[in-house]
Image (cartoon, rainbow, N blue to C red):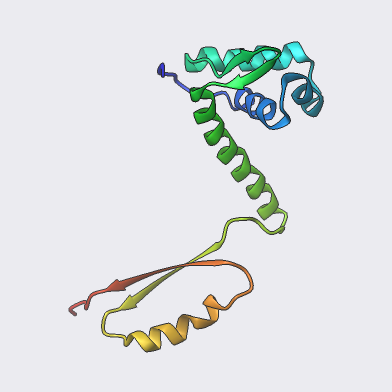
Length: 138
């Protein structure tokens, strides 16, 4: 891929929408933009990347290998953006909450397990990250 200084996320959004909606016309409806505008934005992304993202297969557009690669990242980017917006509104997100815990190596594992058990039984999904620390000399 050709080097680029920055990524235009508007172009990436239009590309992502074309793939998700199944075509330029449907993406234009979703984005409330004309078909030529959407096509131009996708072409601008292709030029910035130095790669073709779609190939024609009859009347349909089919993703190239690079297009599939770019789409995977775009999907993750815009999914995270939606989760961010939902989280700020207090709505549930698909990402589990993280609980970072440091446990001293001198603490018995059974006690650590019992202390952390309520977090593991929470109705919300929690990603528990537990690290064991060595003794610190005073």
